[in-house]
Image (cartoon, rainbow over all chains, first blue to last red; front, side):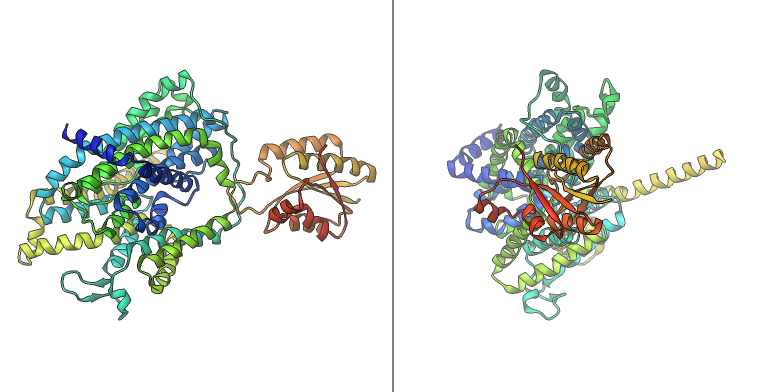
Length: 503
Length: 130
């Protein structure tokens, strides 16, 4: 019950007119970028990071929370109306949502997505309020070896679970870890990978890396594919739901929340897996399975709830352990450090005001989303007619401004260009972006813990396996890599047998 | 046989242009080339016809018995795409539906029709919806 009191206190702090204004701005910006495919919430948070330098931490986090949830919601609009998922987590929504829209039920699809997101986000945020303090209490007792193991585990899980190719994922992760090494060694003061540039020795600003990879990389990629056949959009009016739709939606909403939250809360990251699982579950549970694939409302309600619940869940490791598992929370963590706030298990104690206000503002942002998005859906659809040159010119402007404003160094703008080209190359060769950003952020965190563990053990490698928790985590990481491989081998040998038999 | 180019968009302007072009084609015993262009630089372009809209006008044109072709084009400027289609097919006439706009509106929004009227090498018939 203590959590509830603190949360109510947070609500009180967050419910000032000024803070509500920032929440509203965040939600609108978030939906704006979420609706546009290619521009995710991570990019929006990275772009807006410099804008918030003038705000106090609470206000900027209220805004970020709005952007995060808004971005998650906006993706569903594009999925349903255009069959183009704005976010990887809305891929499942597109399957049934677009079919519904084609059958003239776009309004109901949008409504079930919006209300489902609201319910899942609210339940998810409440769960965060109850789980994060408990986890943080445990987190304080965790030693350096286990902490390092958690970081290794989350890097392995995020890299191997996401995307189609593990090899590409790990290439991206190691690129990120290398970028994270640039600059002075935090322990010994030795310059690493600085190419004798004093400006590089200062370590790279995560904002410059994130904006370069996300914003500039995407802008260059879009410029390389400027003219494409326009997509067919399904016109939509006011979203609404009938009695039957409510009856069919509420169970999938709750089931989606139950599936989505744990996936966000475990440092396994990504909303792809839970949305997929939720879709499969709804399909199995449906009384009349034949409607699936033709536009079943359960197939929109479940995955949309799952994706928002997992978005909420990612705040558990972020707040309790200082470990980000999605690109957006990685950038938010960078924002936290730029305010001089040390993330980690102590955060809940040292910055409890900030944490509870943030959680409360997540609830407020969620409610605002519902209020704004149901009536504004046709307006958001209009955004899709903005010509790319104008849109990306604006993004490039904010990207350069942000990179320069971070340290007032012209050199950072040059770095922005370098990372932009890297981002373009990664998109060209199909490398996922998230592992790189995680590598840049988790790399130095992990290194510090690694060094600590080794110092305690006097340089003995066995010091890394001192704690039972650490060993368990390494085993899980190993299994996460090996099991899919083994399953793949079995499947392959089976199909080979079948082929032999059929011959 | 001569050709009449229609600058088509799936709205009332495209409709009147198409209707007028059919009349003209009957008078002149000409074929129709329907051009529907887009800059292709936005995710959604409401002036670009969907598959079912294309099927609809193809069906309507088939009932007229006139020889016709429907072409969808991409490029930096929709006006240039129409002019180019007219030049390459040796068209004798371009029919285009124009919007009523104030001078300020024209300054702000630019105009495909203006570009076609000024740039075309053949005659241009500008029609307006009632």
